[in-house]
Image (tube, rainbow, N blue to C red; front, side):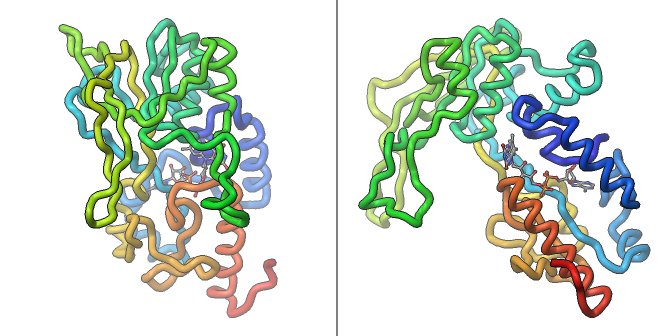
Length: 311
Ligand SMILES: Cc1cc2nc3c(=O)[nH]c(=O)nc-3n(C[C@H](O)[C@H](O)[C@H](O)COP(=O)(O)OP(=O)(O)OC[C@H]3O[C@@H](n4cnc5c(N)ncnc54)[C@H](O)[C@@H]3O)c2cc1C
């Protein structure tokens, strides 16, 4: 119902003010771009219709299929995907400053976030703003070193080191400690008598190598713990574009289920259909979405006009 994708409904407002997103959308609208909301391509508008009405189609459909957690208790009340929590929070905030109650309220609740990445951090920051009782962030990978390890991780590789983002800083301030627990695997989610989540059972792990050289998590005997939980948020990454549209267009996909299209060409396997942003690259960053959008516009211009003056 609002334009902006994850900039509007994924990234929480304390990280990105929605007035700024809307300001840009308004500028684009004034330039003559027609935005159509509440319309799902493939359902409300058919793929055939789009291809008949337009000479080129650019798919910027994101990559928001969440990775699930296949453990006992996943179906319990109070267990949610991170994006359901974040999206409902922002929508309710924008619609009514939370007065409509149409969001998952973490006030007074023990929140366990499964996944130590940026989406998990946004869940921690949002839960703290709801005034949760406690917030814990579980990560299956090891704690990164304080400083880059020059031998195994030299420049120009991305420096792997411990970062303390806003969600953790706030948790340290409020709860007295970093909410992240590393090398922890979720074994089971426990239920109360009404089918609500009550606790999360975890076990510590180490990463070992099998005889094929593949890494696997080895449980540490006797390290089982039970964490009280009223809300469990699954923030374990994303697995490609939503909803069958790629199949309806009959497009080739890469080995991560994203739309196959070469960077800087953006042409998909189908004539006149282009792809840019997370839907092509996988869940990424705003700067890449902007970069791909601009470059893709130039490619589409060339496709339609035979040449392009766009940068
Ligand atoms: C929780 C979270 C926090 C993030 N924080 C940051 C951050 O701090 N900094 C940063 O740089 N990046 C961040 N990102 C990543 C960033 O938001 C994305 O990389 C960026 O939004 C990608 O833009 P996009 O246009 O490709 O896709 P999206 O933003 O996902 O937009 C896709 C749009 O397509 C629409 N759509 C999908 N299917 C259809 C259909 N069939 N019909 C019609 N419309 C459809 C969707 O509704 C959506 O509006 C974050 C991501 C998440 C999930």
